Length: 116
Length: 111
Image (cartoon, rainbow over all chains, first blue to last red):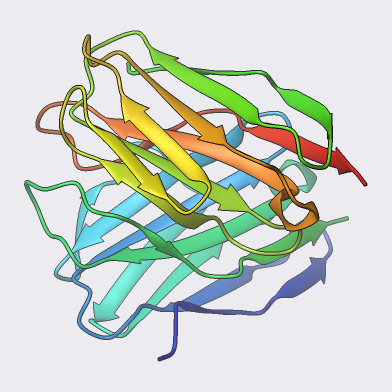
């Protein structure tokens, strides 16, 4: 069975460019999470969706970050304009449990972003 | 907000040794989970705990949900080279769906 699929696996871009990261959750999972991982700050939750609806975006660093989930099988995380401090590994995760229950997260392999 | 303190930050052991790591929270948690991350991969769930006092095993791994609901530990018995990686605890409090992650314990094994 396919797990969480993320693309691209690696992206190198220049400061000021727009970056779009993509995620396909596990079929049937109704919660989707975006995390950012850095050495300094560890794993940080950016935003999560239940049934395609954003529930909590309090972890989104600033207005340069935006996330969408137009349908149950696709989500994007966009950074515009990108800055060097955005360099990190961005993980998407999905969970079979919805609102009101904390379930196990299934992570993708991550997208490693480098902003020069 | 909720915070997790995970220790130790790193461990260097010999193959065959047992390993123990723990997490403490500043508030009561209703769920504890332990994940392992291999280089270049995302974290993978090892054990999930949902009840205070619960002790759960998964092969050579054993984890417990502390009775105070503010701590959890993970033990690995008879370590092998493939146990190398970063281990994360994660938890959530009452009514909170999102998980808080510890900073991780990096395990290195000398053959």
